[in-house]
Length: 357
Image (cartoon, rainbow, N blue to C red; front, top):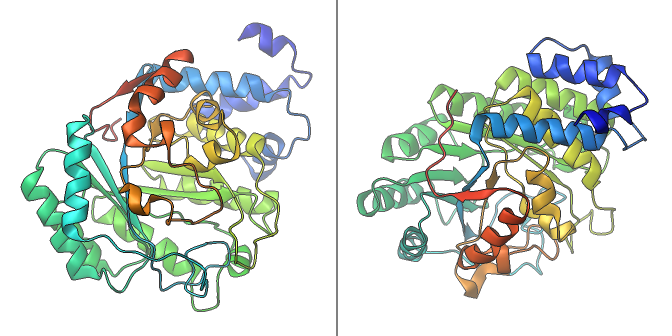
């Protein structure tokens, strides 16, 4: 790593990374210096440091989460998402509780110990249905972790999900900048309500995940600085950061995809700032670049989420175009995944991978 550092022209860069890693407060302009750099040459050093921190805390193990995409219906109309309610070209489905149990059984047979139930905010899968489904999974498979990613719900609903046996909840804040949030969502949706949901989840003792897309229309460096400030305030146990990918038949269908280098820069900086966090190498990274998943891990990510959804519907969960969900991105491709991880000095860890400090 010292050889890499010798090639960095700006000596203050390393000092700033030391400050990030120490937990010391950085002012806005210091964060800006780390983010807003046209020269990508220091990124190799940043990513190497982030990987070193991840391995100090987690060894070379990468945690698996079996992803089950439970519904492609959504009542929301977010401008970037292929599942938005106004997209009449979207292919719609919803899994039954038995379908989900079947996915969990398959995952358990493959050695997975965490299941992520992800879907749109579907009125056909209301709070009662989700609660009952959690209880059904917990009754049959009592030891595996259950993660939910089903959007904004009431405090009462979140409490019921927690009491039923859910362990974790993923809810990207998308953007802390309210003006930017309004560029991405219709007026009926509220940035402050999204943040309130995240605070409620933490108060209910969920292991809570927040995060954002990189490169969404209207996003500026100041938006990302706001995001960092919010993550520092919330201190989520999980941080999801992936590049924006346009989806067909949405208002942003013809926009440019987000930057992979900037995404990896954010992943690495968040690893340094939150050394104990669970940070996925996202499917979006793998979708934009065949080596994206490995690049995420070599930037400090320590989680991957192979897809457990039934093959008959897997391609229908099209939140963005050309989503990777086969091969090493699928739960049945774990051998391919293991080979890929071994090539970069990592290995699969089959434990629950709970957040701990």
